[in-house]
Length: 208
Image (cartoon, rainbow, N blue to C red; front, top):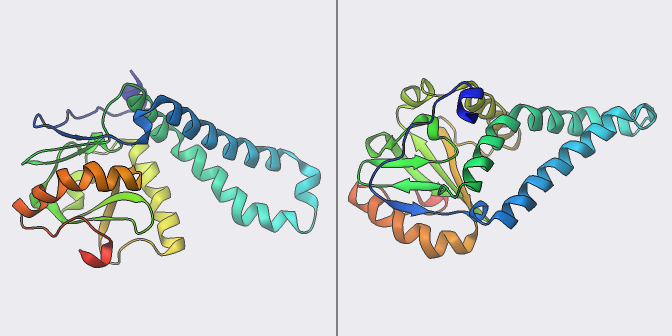
């Protein structure tokens, strides 16, 4: 039902079954995650609605330079996150992997990302982002629904602002894991598959 409301259809995950869970599989952690997101949005709305605060000389540039983009980003990405939260509530894993490729809960509309289309897979340096760099991005962009396209546009904006996007490459963050999850379950599952398809082991971007 939610997929239909979002104007997209979820592509089934691969049948082979190496599943990787994230923190959102724990419903208490999911609740804290959703609550934190809501607090940020509400705080930005309160600042926006408080005309006296906006009129002060120091607050106006702060709002339009920081709170404004945050509020707009949160509203635009809300349908994407809501869909992911609902699937996490149903205990769908963050990633499923097999010999054919990778299926991501967050980007399930893209279907299976085939290994032949994977240029590299790397992690964040201080937290458990799992990011894929694609060789043939148009193949997967055509499958995206409007919620995915909006979220991707917002992600590209912030990546360009903080210069976190690899130059000349199309990258998608497939999942966000804790460091413990990344070291305990993800690498044990992912590294053998990467080696089997001639890709370097999972690590920071400089190692890929």
